[in-house]
Every structure is written in C-alpha cells, then in structure tokens.
Length: 294
Image (cartoon, rainbow, N blue to C red; front, side):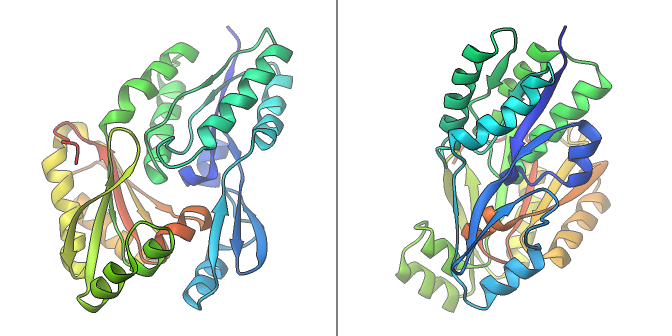
C-alpha cells in the first residue's frame, strides 16, 4: 500500500512543530496588511504575527484571498512525484471556495498521475477546528497505523462532532467582513458586547449568543465544553487565540483544573483568519457528544 500525506492549508493554524512531527504539507495563503501582500506559512517567515496584529490594531486594512487551483497543484504535485497519495482537508466549504479549488487541482492531477490517489474531503470545520480535527487524524494515523481509507472515514465521520466556540472581541473587524452591520458594531462596542460565534453543520458561521463583557464570554466558553462534551471522551481540547495569549492561558488552566481534558494545546490564529476576526479573539475546539446545532 502506498504511503499518503495529510495536506491542509494555513487556516488550520497547525504549528510548524506538528507539521514536521506528522510529515504534513501545508498550502500557504495570501493576505494583505495595508497595501502590502504576504503569504502565511506555518512558521510565519514572511511576516510575524506580532507585526501583523500591531499593524491591524494601528488601523491598517487587513484582508485575504483564497487559494487558487494552481497553488494547490504546486503542493499536490510535489507529493505525487514522491510516489505518495494525498488526503486534503481544509477550510470549510461553507466559508470559502478554497475546497472547490482543491477539487479542480485534484481532478487534473489524477488524470496525469493515474497510479496515485487524491481525496479532498468536503470540510465543515473552520480555522483551529479544522486543525484540531487534522491533528487528531494525524495522531491516529501514526499511533494506530491507519490506512488511507480509514483516515478519510475518520475525517468524514468525526467532523460533524467538532464543536467550535469563538469569543470575538473586535466588532469592527466583523463589520468589515460583513458579519454584522455598522450599527450593531457601534452599539455592541458601546455596550461592551462580545458575540459568541459557532459553525453550523454546513460549515457556515452563526452568532450563537451575545454576552456583555470579556469575563462572561470566557465563562461561556467553559460552559459550552461542559454542556456539549462528555468529560471522559474529551481527552484533547484545543484553545485558539488571535493575539490574546493571556486569555488563552487562562482558558487552558481552567480546563485542566476542572478536569475537562487531559491535554490542552494552544494554537495561534494567523493573519488569514485574523484578518476577519481581529485581535483578541479566543476559541475552544473539542469533540462534543451532546452538541446541538444553532
């Protein structure tokens, strides 16, 4: 049986350490800070996250663009030339056309490499949620020696159970991204409102609720872990943050103190997703047994 490589894009926020540990390939993405164009890589070698968020907070416009079929082809073909198959899982198709670009590239390459396999799993997870699922898949592949079809099945079967709960601190960035109106942003900021955002089972973003104050928002994230998950099965929880390590560390400590997980990994939200959610966002990602769609 041919070896396979797990491929994702940088919106999964998978660390360079995990990329190397599991032999993954990550497709970079383009983002803009002011009038300058950059590419996000797992090691952020073109522009550090510190520089990005400092620029954003200072008022520079931030935006991103989706991956093209040509960019996917470049990464996919590198793997195929090594005689390996590909499993791709990226940003939710409910949020971006990136998945469609991956399929176009895969179909073209399959004609040119008939002996190889490329499976692009239609994703419904977003950002650190996709990274959380992908790292779990990589661990299972390595520790349980699972094959190509078994990992594809795991991704397809498990993704609907991944709970995404995001506390958003920057309403202005949500307004710029078209997620809330200008009036809502102004009123929400004045009232110190923190929206709690989740993803539905089609992979689209939904405002689940709104709470007043960051402290209550942080408490709400912990409550969701307790309500959506069965403690014994949530061995691994991921905490994501956009330039808010202090809050991420607090969430990690409370999760471990309450016995909600045996392992908590903190992931940085990079410039592509950060362009839309803004500085200050925090998230918890986990497998939820009692999750109810919003």
